[in-house]
Length: 277
Image (tube, rainbow, N blue to C red; front, top):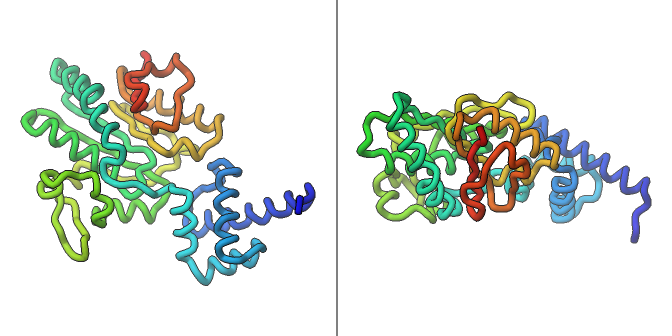
């Protein structure tokens, strides 16, 4: 049955009520994401729950808070693992990190500043810490600071605890697993303190908050896809302002940089860009 315009408007108002309820419960600003994207996944959750009324679904969420987690997981906002898309990390190490290190070695500034934007539960930020520690192991003069930010306070708490399931480590080779993780119980692993200390976690809204400053590298992968075109452009401008001269931006393969006056492409396949000065 084809819905009338009034029925479609009424349904969308109901979906907005659900989104505002989830925003309040989890303090996650889903209003920043594309409505069509969020609505599609929200309709799927209502269908699976056998509910067609927004007020009824909100009451269901109050009684079953785990349903909110299922919805957020369906959005894939917090779905990640260590060295996700390992070829991206390899390309970053060879084409960006190597150049940065050479540049820093010839200057007095031996500080590497990196921002993992939209870090979820920390796997990407810690992957960067491991990669950089491996690269700089015999270069003692370097100081590395990694800032990892996300809007989800629950994800940030998991990140700070640094305890992960074996599934999170499926792309970590045995040598690195033994070197940087300790097995605890039931296929759980905890990251060693040396790597944990390299990363600082903080709550941050990419759309409404100011960007971090003086960054050499920004990783922001599988985040911009949730924003509309205008928000994506605003975010790219924010990243440009956040990066030092010659700094690098790494985004997801499904994402794009349109303004060639801001960034030059270093690796078109792995989506690595360098700030245009």
